Length: 342
Ligand SMILES: [Mn+2]
Image 1: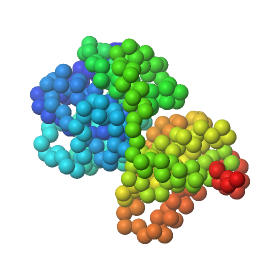
Image 2: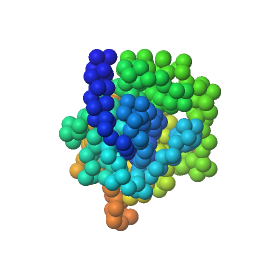
Image 3: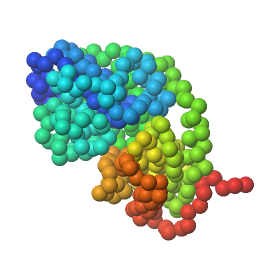
C-alpha cells in the first residue's frame, strides 16, 4: 500500500496541469487492456481533470471483448484515425514501448506506462512507470490506485475489472498473485454478475465457427505439444483462443497456434510447464525476426510478412514451427493429426 500511495502521488504530479491524454492499449485489445484503459481514464479525470481518449491498433475481434466494449459504451478509436498532435500526454496500459504489440507511433515516448509484463529497457526512460510483472493483470495495479485514492469504482468499471482479472489469470489459475485474489474478491461484490455472464457468452460472428473448425482440423500433435495453423484471419484474437482451447487436451502441455493477419504472422503460446517460461520460448521463436513476450504460461508474438512472397511466408512458418519443436518437445515422434479420420 505504501508503494501504491507513492506511485499515486507521482502519477498525479505527471497528470497535473494537463488537459488531454491519449491512452493506448495493446493491439487487438484483450479485457485487461480494455478495463485498464477505462480505469486509467477515470483516475486521470478524478485526480487531475484530464480528458482522455482511448485508442488501439488492430481490432476488437473476440465475441466476449466486443460484448465488454458494448456494455461499457466505449468509443474506442483506431489509432491511425487519431491526430496525436492534439494530445498533451500519452499513456500505455498492459503493454510497453517497443514490444511490437501496440501501435503508439514510434517517435512518441509515453509519459505513463502501467503494465504487468516484464519491464523493457525503453520503459525505464518514461516519466511515470509502474511495472509489476508478478501481478496477474494490469487492472490489479489500477485497483490498488483506486483504493489508495479512495475513489469509488462504479458498477460497469468493477464488472470490467473483474472480468479482466478472471480472463488474464483464467479464474486465478495461471500467473496469479495474492494482490489479484484480493482485488477479485472486492470487485466481485461491486460487479454486475448477470452482465458478466452475458459478456462471457458474447455473440460471435459466423466465421468464428469456420476458423475454429480449421484450427481443430489443422492441429498436429508432436508428442507433448500441439501446433495449429489458422491460415489467413481478420480476427487475430482467434489464434489465442484456439491455443487456449487446445491446451485442454489432457496429453498436451504446450500449444502453439499461428495465423496471418494483415501483414503479420501472429503467434500464440500456451503451456502448463510454467517453469520453462512461455515468454522465453516466444523470444526464441521470433528471434531476430519479430517481437514477442508475455508471461510464464502464455505469450504472444508477431513477425512482419510485409512484401514476402507466398513461399517465403511458408518458409518462415516452417522455421517458427521447427524452433518451437526444438524448444519444447521432449520426444522426437513424428507428428500426427489431432483429429484422426474414423
Ligand atoms: Mn494483461
